[in-house]
Length: 148
Image (tube, rainbow, N blue to C red; front, side):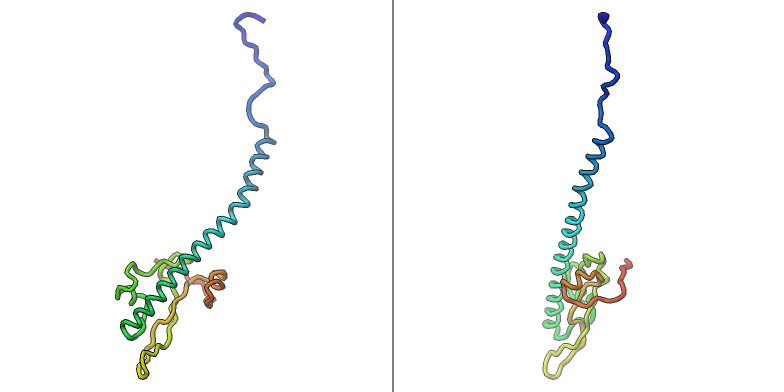
């Protein structure tokens, strides 16, 4: 070997082999297969919690409006215009729209002589079967879409 000459070994190259890369990718995919369903369940549960809170608030405001005005509201928009839902109608977390709420109309007896027709309940416009089972209400057969 001469002085000042660098001898390189042609067979030693740095990097990963194809097998090593495939093993790492397989491990990542296996870990992701556990994470995605868990993430989906967490998102659905958070939507359910928001929906339950929104329904509780709207039902409470319908009752409050009925007591204050001695008649039930004729529309959800009437609750907003009267200031009972000051932030406007909430967005349904499952449909992503505030226009899909389904109002239940009924007779409300205010006194022995007075009976009025108006909103007595409200439901989500979603046709999600899980939501229907959890919140215990009838699901409309047709899907409701929001057109903003």
